[in-house]
Length: 399
Image (cartoon, rainbow, N blue to C red; front, side, top):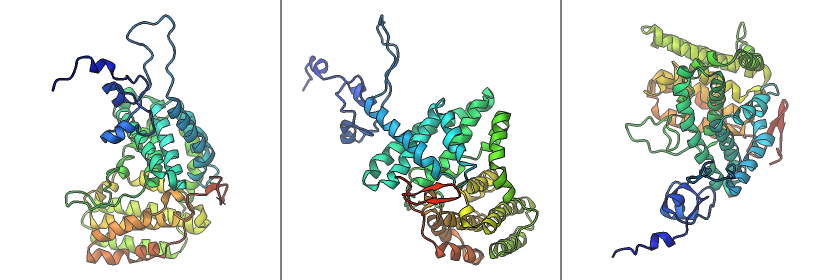
């Protein structure tokens, strides 16, 4: 049956609604994060700000304005990030300004970084307000997927453009990416045989590899910014690189691991060096932990390990090799211990250790007995209703 020619003209048009409704020239109810029509049609719902110029010239052009509902949501998320979330990203008062001030200042001039900041805030609100969790998680994912595409394009063009300001934006983006993924719910997966089961996820299949190119960014960061960041992180870096490691059961376990690695990889000096470097950085973090106490362990310490080993060691987990899995098991111990002070790490030590144990063969299973035991000891996490303040934890956190 043919459609009457006049029908298309009588349908209500949407000028400020989502992309799908505007394309179909239907009235959009502008519900966030997904309008009702898109939900019914199972479509991805996106909102775009109207362009400044119209098809016909206007004598008094007006600046575009965001959707009121979207604007209010963004304001809510930015307020939550600035007053609560930034205080949960580090327990070190010297490092907190990186997330509280420097990141926000850069985000106000970089759209994909701003969307990442809002995505991190939305994840935190979803975890701390379970009754609204689905809505906030959907918002977080929408923002982050948009930001990720723009950041990947920027990274691809960075060397050609040699833009110092963009290098800073990407550095902040890589740090917030780890926070975003750690805070997102670990995804159960029934990994097929051709998929890496250790890091597979329906949402973030390669999250651990997103910072692989960040070392190449550092030389492009302006000297004054790099100097500021270096001075902020130098105290923690020095604590992780002492002249000698203090005796402890952690150091004994890692020294024993280094002996086993040396025996197994003695015919492959290059691969052995990669593994020993990864364990040496772990020994530094465990040294700082035993010297200053468990509350001293910061998320930034885990960032440092990932950044340090991302270019050579992390690719070994994509295969994965048995020796790389064993070293990663000791990193899972740090994830589990840090969970006591950092809500963002909740559940990851247990999840990754379970996946890892399924991949380790019988011989190498004996190598990780100590690490498995440490993770199984567990400990009560700090929870999502608290914020790190000063040198300790402010319980209740103002959420």
